[in-house]
Image (tube, rainbow, N blue to C red; front, side, top):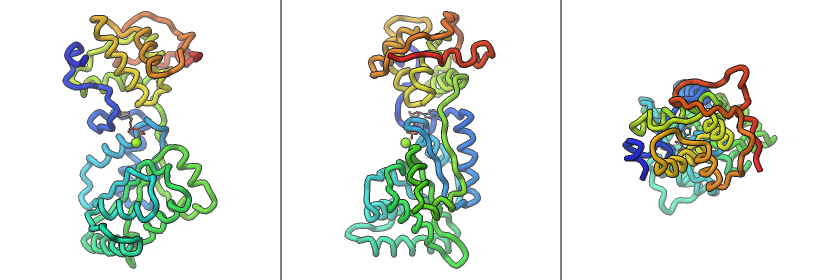
Length: 303
Ligand SMILES: Nc1ncnc2c1ncn2[C@@H]1O[C@H](COP(=O)(O)OP(=O)(O)O)[C@@H](O)[C@H]1O
Ligand SMILES: [Mg+2]
């Protein structure tokens, strides 16, 4: 709707985990490096956690865009299931027939498939997204899958992706063996304040016009306050701010527009924004941290 006004070829702040839009913040870059290493080195279990909306699925999709020559992949995104259903989804994604098969038959098929893949020199990987929904028993059964092995090697590498609650579940005593097998362990943190303008500029560049928006210092501080640096929240607020900002004509997106967008999305009202500089700047130019200002913009209160 506002794309033509801002000369954008597509919407810059959609909520789909489109890897084309990925901005590599410090935390995303580090996680990507570790995950890539884990796959290349055939690490046992790989664990990736992060708050909802922090970019886990986007990062995994970006990772899978890399060409790993021998990787054969199964991805599971629906985890409100029992073990048999989980197995069925795994086998289905590996391209195995699943119709009418029970747990024993599914396990048998999976084992045979993995042995064949191993013989062919391939590297089967299972990615379970939203793994925070798996309970202790299901996680233990998933661990057993990674025990399928040939005489020389484990047959299946497993990547667990989930919200921070997954770590709490993994900390239970019954999952000690699984814990001990995690060799790559990453946690995605929110964007830092100084990464926010880079993130916005990056997404707008991918959407066709890096210079579409200008923000005041105050607006960026406010956007950071509302979103806490979580990309999904940044996107929802920024999208609505563009929508309400467009009819007001050219010029920087004002703090009021952001405040209004956040309010419409159900965020509490933020007060006490500092610094209240009205100076505008292109979003890409770093402004944070300056020692005198450090943390100042984050000192907002909500009501
Ligand atoms: N590093 C990033 N670069 C660009 N966009 C991101 C990044 N991280 C998250 N996003 C965006 O935020 C939204 C939520 O990301 P998503 O991967 O679904 O989060 P999660 O899986 O952790 O809940 C998506 O629109 C996604 O494109
Ligand atoms: Mg996700």
